[in-house]
Image (cartoon, rainbow, N blue to C red; front, side):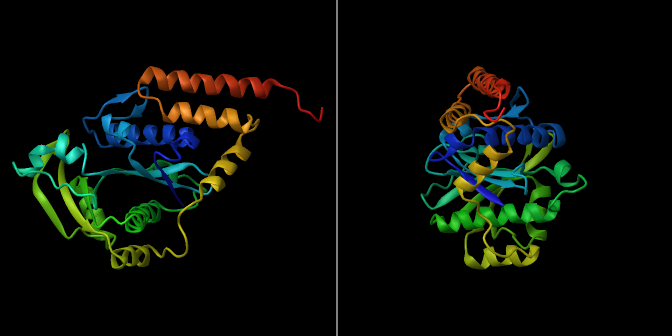
Length: 264
């Protein structure tokens, strides 16, 4: 199941964004050894402050099991501002219909636990399908993906092979990075779905997720307070702001947890 989080709804899903940042730290720093900035167990960079679109994969219990970040190429993005060496001196592609696709990762540890409701392979393909369908529905014609060689092989294995590459492969921490180009077409979406056996709607409605998260909380804060806390977490620009927002959320949750039930 895929939830799209962007500037319009991020105030509702601060908790999910926080789990996403933690997943990115575990995958990119701990597992892959990338040279990324991690603070307080969360991998967040300056591009997360530019209101990107996040394609987030959730399991049946609404836990984050995968994520991806999409940025317009008309402004700052990783290929133009971080991985210029890939371009070999050529100017970066800039177009309102060409977006950059980065930070693709899957929580393989959670998905390999007993009782997991999907496999790592299925979750990865569902996330790929979510990226392509979101892009197609948004009028995006092409996606540039900054990936490592292993991810490039996974794309090809899932019948989601790029149609071309930009520049050259460069060293990135303990691994390498390359820029792959994928056209966004109904044919690509159909191939990904057919490979994984994905049928039906994969996108979740905001209200469905928000209501499910509220119901799963042992003691639910009033909706206005819950939304306020999520908005503060999602809008935090610094580590201290984020920790303060999380502390406030914990404090308020504790206050309502300690209150006696109205039925007592």
